[in-house]
Length: 209
Image: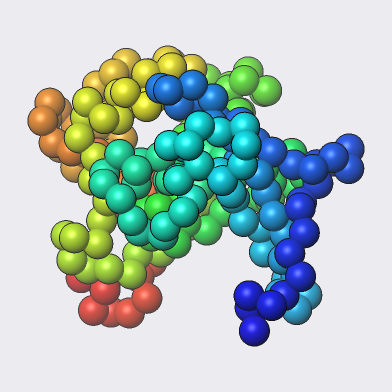
């Protein structure tokens, strides 16, 4: 049984218990990383229910697919950006990332930011390099299955992030829009994933439509 498998704290490259930090509008949010060995495959889990977080932020990982749009955005920032930071903190440098649905698509932006910061690449160069290792799979061919966030909510959470990419506000929001010239279209995680992945597929011919 999955829930009876031994759970242990993951450690960073120095052997210390691993906690990643993210910048949210309310202040820093910390995620503890847990590890479960599922056969020969290590499974890593992010947990915000730790003393370092406020009572409100401890709820981020409490319920899967729960809460309002803002809670969903908090969760997907933790998964995409926090998940990538956790892998790197453990000394892991994957060359290929699979985005299963759009939930983890923010990892693509974090990969670009890291390449710009560490290698000195321009945005276009970093995006081309990062996207070449991104693969996206969509499962849900209905509108309700694709997360969308209001522009003002995106700017609330990414106000300090998108300038690090060298993007204007509208250029950043355009990454999640079908019509990049629209000022009112919501930010869609599926659109972001499609724009930042070199390869995309569906799980069946029906889903591809």
